[in-house]
Image (cartoon, rainbow, N blue to C red; front, side, top):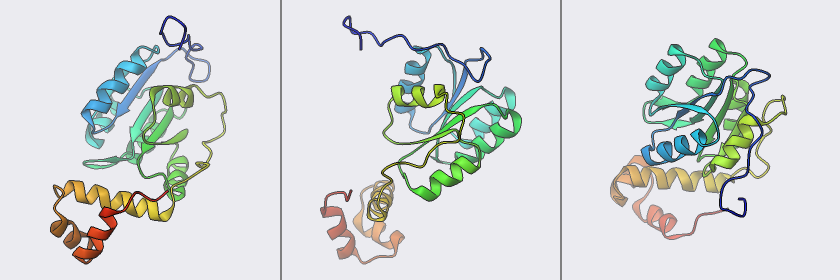
Length: 192
């Protein structure tokens, strides 16, 4: 932030020498999608948005963007399908995968399918912008501090719990675990 409260001037956008500033953002969280779209527009990107794999693939087919920010888990599938299609249609595109499940296997898969970088949620617009503008042409590095297996398990349980409307019995049934075991896990703090 500058003294007058504005964001500092960012270096000019470039996708490897061109002036294409097109950006596709795919996320099924409408509030996050709207905030990120506005933030990236203020940084000079020409933003298009999609809320599903199907919409994302349609946008890539219509006009493959120079940049993409794609959530890993979407309601109708996996965001890696969009990255894969984007790289087929536009090999020079820079795609960043966002996910709440920051494990090494997922990062490796994302990079193999053509993601330029991989960020764990919550990632802010400055981190995303820096990843998109990165001049390091090597593929993304694995996360320095990936989530522990306990943390990944805990987050999965929390996600299923929320999807079941915070119903402990239904969550336990879907996770194939004893109800009391689930209650003990839910009562604990998130592991690191």
